[in-house]
Amino acid sequence: MALECRELGYDSAIALGGDALAREELGAHGIQVLKGYCIEEKSAKGVTAACRRAPGDRIIMVEAGEYAFNRAVISIPGIKILRGLWRAPSNAVDHVLARFAAQRRVAWDIELNPLVRTRGHARQRAIQRYRDILMLHRRLGVPLTISTGAASVLEQRGVRDAMRLCALFGMGQEEVYRALGTMGLLLRERRDVEVIGWAGDRPRSD
Amino acid sequence: MGRRPPTFRLKRRYLLARINPPWREFEAKELYSAVMEAATSLWGDRITACMQPSVVTVARGYAILRCTRGEDERLATAIATVVGANRHPVSLRTVARSGTILSLKRRMARMPLKGERLAIERGGRAMEAVRYAGQKIDLIEEGIKNQELLFFTDNELEER
Image (cartoon, rainbow over all chains, first blue to last red; front, side):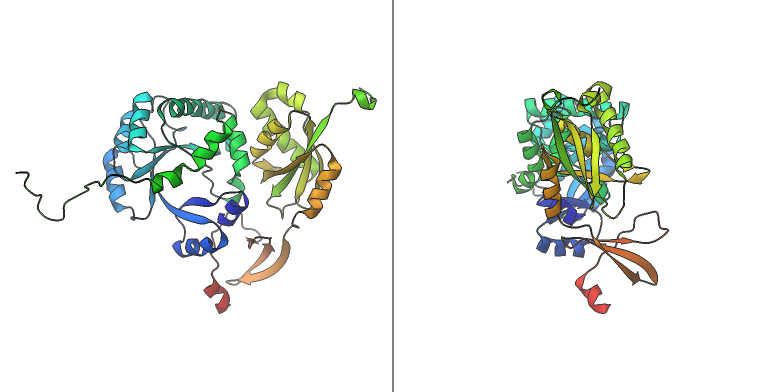
């Protein structure tokens, strides 16, 4: 799949699961495979616990849910991507959440799979949801990522196909390029030092 | 309508698409049904009628598709949503587009060949290996309907 990904015009990919050794070897074939970790918990508490369990070198993404859940998830440190927004309820995101995600630099994922595999009402709903997300991205600057969500070579789509599919909900060529580079940008971004815990006793404030 | 003089004919555009998986043989009619289903569900009857999509030829793991001029982008989007033909999973990747079939056939001749087939045995199971350009190998086992993930490393090859 990684080799097909390279042939389709990508220079890197995020893979969930699989074998780490094989991935390192793929680096020599001109494709960088980053390791992802998808959390599909129903509660924010569960997500926090899963985040702690996640290996340190993984890009953590969380399956979106209800509005309150999404808001809680965005505030959890270490989470990079909120995905599956097309499956979430229609009121799962709004402008307040978009502004918050833009501040926290948590990207919202646009999955191409529903545009390719679904038909009729389901695809119309996905297009509608992606239009809303695009509007929030344009106005409030919430970072977007584009993913195929592919489980096999046949489900992968190239860069040009991604552009064509994203044009269905009004996303321009430049916006697609930017969204494809979002993950690289987020990983390179310099962040302020965050205190995530104390090794010993908490120092006294006085 | 009967055959029209050249100035009355509609201008056409042709798309060259790679068929994935390349080892599965499809007839033009099967691909046509899949493309029409994808185009109709995505763009609706009116635009598909204006597009007039058709599959001209299928050969060497590639297909040449035809549409009216100006609708080629829509056809390319529609074929990106093709997921199956004749109850087999398939994906079509647009490789090139042109105003003539001849130029696409020339382009097709320059493209890498369909994978060569080898009979191999792995773990006591007889399999067919299809090797492509770019270090890709598909392993197909007769009678197995699901997909299985296999990793080949250099060490593994030395042991064999």
